[in-house]
Image (cartoon, rainbow, N blue to C red; front, side, top):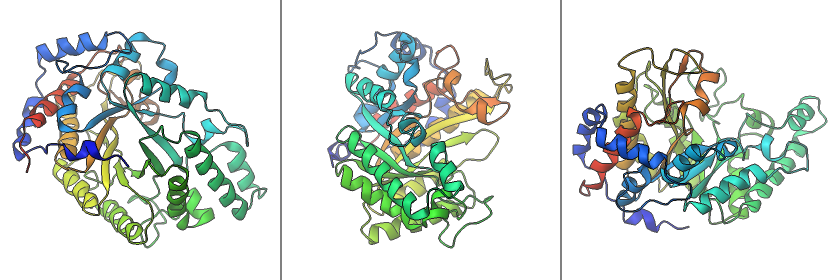
Length: 395
């Protein structure tokens, strides 16, 4: 596995704590440059003078990423942002099982391949998302499991084939795979198992907890050079009790001791301004995972708030932009302060494409760009955080 970029990464010093105040102020010069970068020709790669996020992150060794919708790449402004501002991309939905195999035995690779080709054209790495998740499973599978046409023994064979087929298809083209996604219980889940895994999770219900480790083994066999991640939310900094983070840490430690080929932990990083968040706790949790010899990453960062409508997504509170900038900056800062944090991915390019309004009624404005693809204060906050990190000495 290629870890050479990590060895040259400077760590952010404690003086980065002052970035929160800086993040709240929008720099006219930086926004002007951001607008210029937004309208650069698709395919343009950053150079040292750029103030794009990917260029500012380069001296730190951190890769800045984004999830993308390949259907929107025909929009030159969207493609320019996706290709010019970020150094990794994640297909938001195109590698999920219901998209890859909508009919049993019939694979639909083209949309995911379009993302991989876009990344290759723009000098980017790809995060594969996701192989084993209880959502977006094809209906042919869930229907037949539900009516008994597919037994649990047959289901295990089908899952193994799915993991091996998908990872093999993209062998050598995926930097990080989210192998298993959202398997652990939250505080509101009714049936947590003794080790914290959600007993009501679809795959665990039918195949037992061991299916998670098996998925990692199968993925590693299919592509030994891809970094394999467990991905979840509320596992660093969002949960005041830290119970879910504790459970994931204990499980990961056990997996490492058993020789399961897990390479990293992905903290999704979905935040909401109405709830508490501790950047210090996030840094501590990320460092704890790293202490096991694992890579870590922020994989789906966004910060939602209350908005006027799903169409325009203007925050209803005049302080929302400052709060969002603060939390985005804290998340990035926490990642920068942990040597093993190798990537920071924002979930969706712009508010118009964000999953948030369709999931959380009355909320939105969660990304770095507004519904008209204009950079927001949150974008500038990340620029400033990266600028300060580039000059910070190693700890």
